Figure 1 (spheres, rainbow, N blue to C red):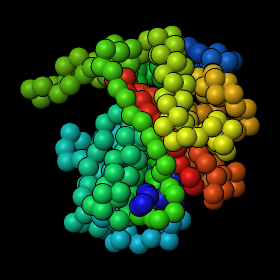
Figure 2: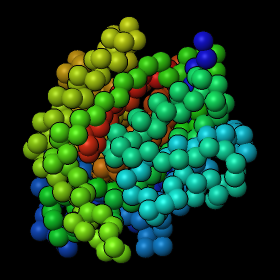
Figure 3: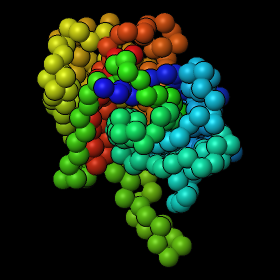
Length: 319
């Protein structure tokens, strides 16, 4: 059987780091208010001249270096983002151009905070079918440009960044299994309803969120999809070495780990420093865990995320 195996990871955070105290100087909030509700202490904000493709390209270069793979070997780029450089072409093709590897398939995936799960399993399918041998999977976001900085209920939650993995065809276990789901009935809970029409923005271009509704749905749904993937792969919770979750809210992450009967000592947690970077959060956390030495070859990882739509998913990986 042919697997899609993670060959290397990389990430990138903008230079500007904004703490809760610094944010409180501009918005009616406080470090205590943000920390107790979310676990967030700081976030990185892209510079005015930085684009999502810039963050993605830097993360991709670092992943390629870690994998020992030349950019020219990549025959597929799947990029997850809710904040593309432009309406079209896809940000993936812009990254492709910046990497100098014209010719391979490249496209974006839009599933917001679950985007990396969707991109990763899409690339896995390409590799398992033989349509690709080496794939670059990226999650990249500049959410700071779609939040209302006067709305303390949303602006304090998000940050900017990018993470990437290089997948390669292997006879050794890599991505073992996964499950993706979506339900458009929950659209009102989390959305950016604005759109371009007639050269103008119609509707609001800012994140609209029902915080309590999102929290309740996320806790229930992430626990269930994790259980489904474990059952599908014949894996017990005790066999998981690390959970690498979407970094939206520490309390949601704690609730998911508790439901699986796992200690927070088995969770890669970066929300404190990164805040919610949407599609970038899982690959950012994954790269952080690997480079810190916590995640080691041969270990079993559970990746999971949920985002607007709602869309959600979980993937079991033998790293």
